[in-house]
Image 1 (cartoon, rainbow, N blue to C red):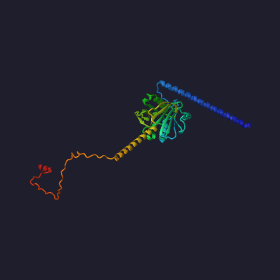
Image 2 (image 1 turned 120 degrees about the horizontal axis):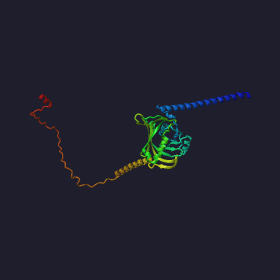
Image 3 (image 1 turned 45 degrees about the horizontal axis):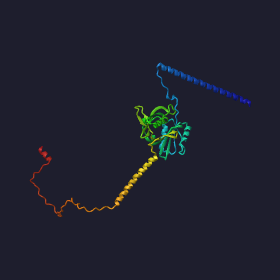
Image 4 (image 1 turned 180 degrees about the vertical axis):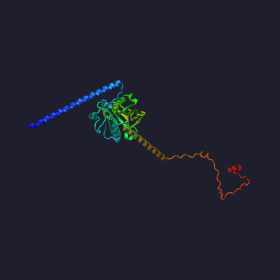
Length: 354
């Protein structure tokens, strides 16, 4: 038993020594490569000092410092339009991460734990209610702030079929309305939008190009989102999509909750809006019903008989009686005057003149 174990140990020692030699060779090659790189850099610097133009390196050599990651997911019960909108935003944001749908019975504070497990510090959460109302939460996880919006007028990429196009993974420009700098709650939303929708520089999944722009415009107390392509020839804009309108509800201090920092006074819930429409329709129906009842009651009333007016026939003109004579034979023909000179037609007169 002792004799066969000795050669095995010797073989293991030999293989271990060979592995160490290989690793040492790799380290020497790496150090040589770094020295050659330093020499090349030094030579390029000398060439630049000599007056020759330097060719800048590729953009991907930069360091990825902004580690923003956005979790985009939704609750159960959303319709097809909201699902397509969520997928379009995932395509436009290479720094986003997907997740499965969350149950509607769960509390919103669970999203903070989901973001922590997914290693995300920002979140876009789509919440559906009554299978017709779509809400969107944007939050800075885990400390806040967060904002809740009602999404209206949703149009997805497949639905619009615009002529614009952009490279997948390219970094967008962000364009904001000047009103974002005038009011404090809009300034908070602007900072949230910048941190969520802006693709970090040198992100591994992003492309080093800027060929589209996200615009956030404030009109009618709502935020209008549009996505445009930047054409290189004349810097014109062509819409790509998607497009939607954000109606602000509240801004909270914490992530998905906490003290309320701002509440929109002009916000009207979809339930209240539908109730007002139903009340207006019922009011129109009741008005028609009352008019019909009033007309039927007027028809049933007895008409008043006025006494005879003695001056009624003052302006009547008397008409003479017509004769009852009926002519049964045709009238006698009167003889024609033959002595009358026959008048020529215009054409005959023209011939005579020729």
